[in-house]
Length: 113
Image 1: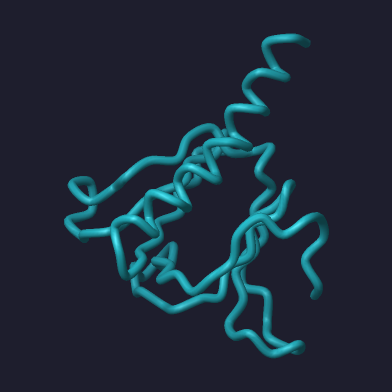
Image 2: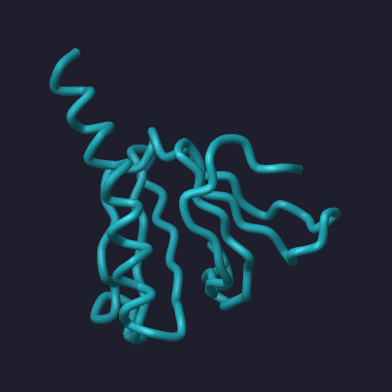
């Protein structure tokens, strides 16, 4: 699967699995509409997650919440929570800032409608 939309940010993140809470390294691509996670960077790498940014309601530092440093979470309006970790704090802050841009745009659009 090839990501749709303009690529805003990409890189390797550790993503916590939903049911077993295992951390797996994923290559993530943030576009202007989606966050994709892939099992690798090869052209035929499996897409393991597709998150529509329109469904996201919050993104924040989750170090204290899950007891892991350099982590952040994304919450959706369907009550799903996705946890990620990175190697450096400034990298986490960049991901949070990029995701906030799209979440805030969505919230502003909802206020207008």
